[in-house]
Image 1 (cartoon, rainbow, N blue to C red):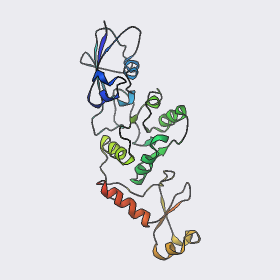
Image 2: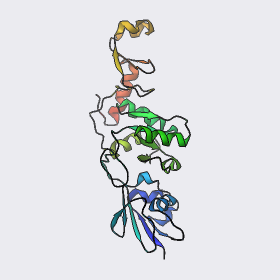
Image 3: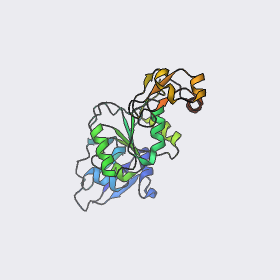
Image 4: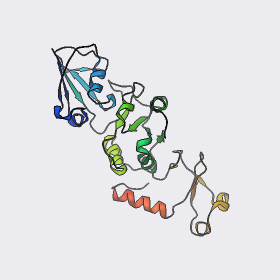
Length: 246
């Protein structure tokens, strides 16, 4: 006798065979955990917030059995990964790791002052290990990456466009500000520190020397920031998205 797996809300759209509309008659012809069964349908375990077997809460290690009805629920905003959870251990603080296919999202999150590391072109194994080692939520559009057992917290981005991805993350994690905009290096994520103009004067162009007096420097890559035209453009972008400044 097969099991019935019901995927709720937006999880149904992740099915490998969308015509099943969220309800799958799943053959129990081999020993498998609920994690194995759900991921075989195309849903990474990171997208699951609650598992019910015949109406009772279960975990990923629960064995699939004949005749069961399994309900699979996604998280409801606001999600707080620092709180205890039956399916995964809590994080010490909310921090992100973006992989290579959502690199622009990493820059937008840093712009808001949110702790966001970038994995670059590292191998999937290394990305997953880093997310676990540093206690970060892994952000990606790669389902296979999120299926790795080392990944405990992650989000499969539904949106394609970076600004829409940012809105998706802010909504999911209940991040509404006030944000510490321009407090992190957009290149390497390190918190910026104030620097006296005299210390960096030889590095400044003539117009920057004349019109600006407030500067910050990245202690990691030594990049210097000041509130120039690029700064104003990013503020306008945030305002267009309904996000305030610092």
